[in-house]
Length: 209
Image (cartoon, rainbow, N blue to C red):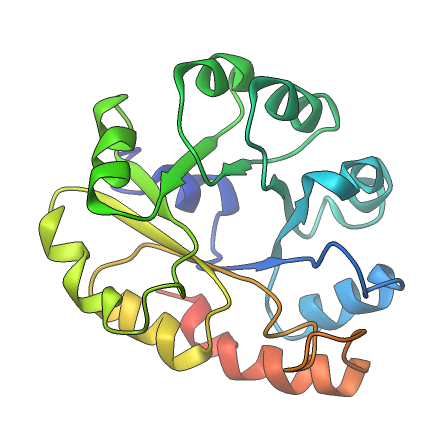
């Protein structure tokens, strides 16, 4: 822990909800970013496929938001994210080569099963991503955390507000939310700004400790 905080909490500061930007469908990310900021969600993770957008995002919003890169699966991806200026990096897998590539930038690695989470913690980390956290249903939020009472778990996936609430009640320190806020249920295109605002507002109460 870092002064009582998990690595991700320290990286995203006051935010407990990290919004993952979809790989496709959200063409006007500037508008979406402004809406998220207005609704109090100031931590975003851009997929590694969109890492080229990071310098512009940071130039426009870096003083108000914490901007990271997610979905890296190898050391090259970590180094690319760090070089682009990412405030944090999220990887759904673990490995010593990934850790070496991050340098001083906070890197969270993860897995889904108890064995994979244990492998993350064996690297010396005190925080592990659980990804994709929605794959095994909402009940996983109750069954997995008790197996690792000393660790900080961060679920990552297509998580509705009630699912995030369950993970937080079970002791999760943060949650990475995919799709739900920025895209409609059918996954096609992007939500209009007023719909993004409505959905973001529902998560806002969870965003503060």
